[in-house]
Image (cartoon, rainbow, N blue to C red; front, side):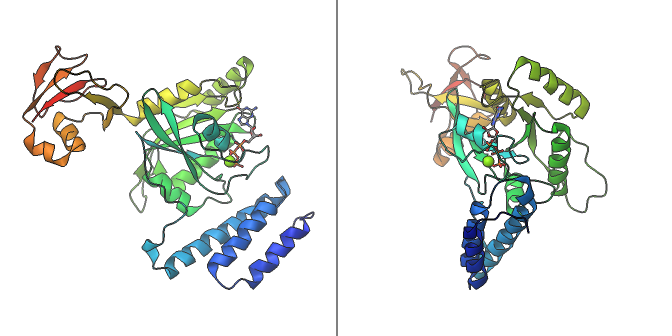
Length: 328
Ligand SMILES: Nc1nc2c(ncn2[C@@H]2O[C@H](COP(=O)(O)OP(=O)(O)OP(=O)(O)O)[C@@H](O)[C@H]2O)c(=O)[nH]1
Ligand SMILES: [Mg+2]
């Protein structure tokens, strides 16, 4: 047991031992985690506590009737794409979410600050991404429910720390994701996997690239890592490449923005319909209203690849920025 644990910690531990229900036990354990001083000596203990909490949550879920109990890790997707941050402690995950969204996750200069997932909405031009702050994942402990969320998400941002051993962090984080069968489309998938791999878009983002000089360190990291996953260097505190980061998310989301208008009126450019690249006019109609699919006759389109007001049929593939006037 690491030394210098404050008396409050032992009081919470006492409550944990006396607790009768999984919920009460979880509460006491969360308090122990919050009280624990933040330094390297407590990392292992924290990982153990977190594992315990996760097991108790599962138990509590089963008692309430399994699937019906909603986990703290259940976050409904919102916006044009869901983006989950994945990375080691202290890389700046919470700082990034705090910078690009209105969420205010706790930020601290020591590892293992974040214990729960916090979503926020990041604005990019006229759309929004849901960006989720997460507890750190390490080779010692990665919450299975968090990995489950990553299996379902649209984009995983692997957030690393340029001031730490970035190569090791990348190897460890990818190791954890691969262990959970989550692979980037740019990774080789090992043969003989017992279950189907889950392919998720990934962006390796290296934070704390605060200066020009550190840009060189980032380039060296990129070269030495040999990774084929796209990489980007950013600095949350210096505000470097933050717009580029959002642009990359936009490209990776593979979506197009389409505006609708009524005859004789202008389109509302602030409120696009966001549909996957390759979507057809018919799919857009279905998105607007399910009855429109049957009623749709044709549409007039204003855009970069058509003549102004050109008539198109249901199978027309929408382009980013198209304005559509649906004729029903
Ligand atoms: N130099 C520098 N420090 C940064 C930058 N971004 C964040 N930090 C600092 O890094 C430390 C950790 O930041 P957090 O946002 O709490 O990191 P985290 O990844 O959420 O940490 P955990 O929740 O413990 O996993 C804080 O002291 C931040 O101020 C950056 O761009 N440059
Ligand atoms: Mg954090």
